Length: 154
Image 1 (cartoon, rainbow, N blue to C red):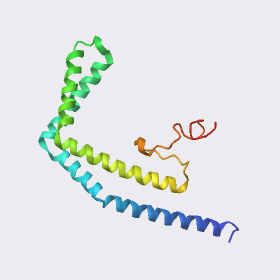
Image 2 (cartoon, one colour; image 1 turned 135 degrees about the vertical axis):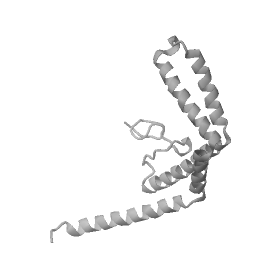
Image 3 (spheres, rainbow, N blue to C red; image 1 turned 45 degrees about the vertical axis):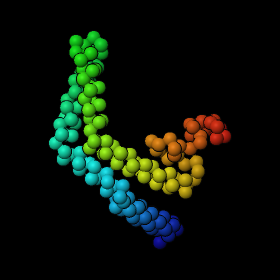
Image 4 (tube, rainbow, N blue to C red; image 1 turned 180 degrees about the vertical axis):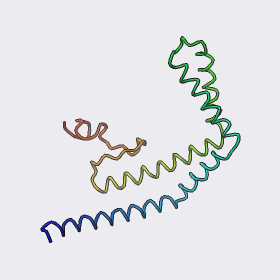
């Protein structure tokens, strides 16, 4: 036996335990009402013929939009495409099935953000946790080393 083996074994077994705990957390999230609602809404989006028609129409229009964007206002169809893309996007956004899916997606993202913040803060208050929600942002606007209002210094 080499001098470092017991320490290596302890680190490895600790890592395995952490991964098992993480898998249990994942399982709990997957079994949550929030995740179930998300899966249900995703199923509805994929299986609603009218919603799928709107999605296809938006994708087609987005391709035209990207083509027109290459030339900008000098493209002959610029005004028409710019107007149409807004109409098609609004129609898609107003679709009840899409709206329910977006709400479920935001709810699931909020849950994941909350879990990330709890894990990060249990390690240290200064651990940076990536979230898209400003509610969870730390009081230090730019992160440590930015010289921000939290007292961090560069």
